[in-house]
Length: 501
Image (cartoon, rainbow, N blue to C red):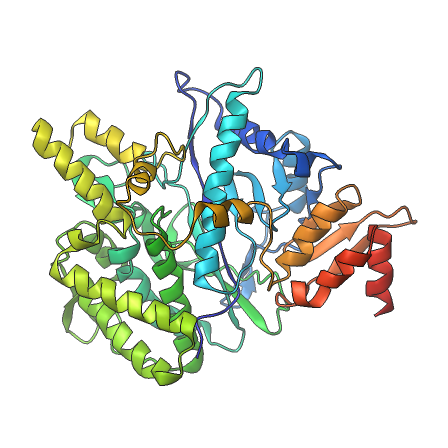
């Protein structure tokens, strides 16, 4: 048993232009991405485009494919031609414009700690992009926020991806992953002032995204959002793998919140793959309970299960943890043991008093800030000042964001150092195919014309382009190909070796 698997995150960032509430978000998002693309290591060659050819976002895990004009790869190419920015980074990540927001997709990694590392590298990337945009003639200041809602009815995503066995029945994922996702917000929520999609009721809730989910299972990601998303687009060998696209989750700033969010999910998925769950934790009304849990920061709300039992979200998580401990046993590797130990520590603290975790998790940290300000100023939850504090918590600027100020004052526990994160902005993970993608872009920038998660396309002056497929995510690692990059001066040399093998 191991927590390790291929995983990644995709974060859409909130965006605003000071003094220009009517600014076009697609234009300003493109300005952000293009400003970062001016970095020397990205601008020294021709910019590689994203290869949409093999993407199939309308294939459903329930066994069918939607048809029609909902998705057309040619339209994505047209978007690029019209100026919407799309950059592949030397660390193997992707920075682009999606749904009128700048989005950062991490490279594929193999463990929760590296998710935190490259997710944080995305934050630093966005902060630098905003700084570069502010110093670009004709653009000026653009503010970015790692959050999930504008509190006016719009929400934008913080998605996770987990590669898992194709042999796992999708119905088992729905049955056993749903209770976990409904309740993990108790440690993975980012916190929000406002109840309802338009935040019309002025109270604090645990999750930024809970009120925006309307169905249990479905393919949509922007309308009628489902707890379990059915997109079946593995970006790998489809005979072996399924990529579970998880759209229900908040954009976390706290490192331990991200670590637990993905680490616990990976353990639960391993248990589902092995048929380890006993099926006793099914929730009677998942969508309603998702919201009810979020709306109760006291964590006292009782969830009704299908078998008639009633548990709090923390109690349900403890039941999942108990089964996970029994499943993992004494043979759990160090990565898995770390997740299990932190999971137990956090759940025990939540059961006592969530505010004990104001130095580890986002929603208690934010609530602590807001409560202190409310008491000092005598404000109710509808005060504009509190709304401003809520938003400022998520500001990516180190000197402005309230989360970053807590870190600077030693008020938030961390897993990583800034040096590690800065290095991850340009260096790819060593143990996935992202190493090959990133190294190709840094070593041969003028010869890589396109790339995607599962291929790199070269133009080495021959009669046709050369596509190198990467259908196995754990091949193309530093151990596999690192030495080739040391001795191949040009892309043609690399391709000669690869095709000879």
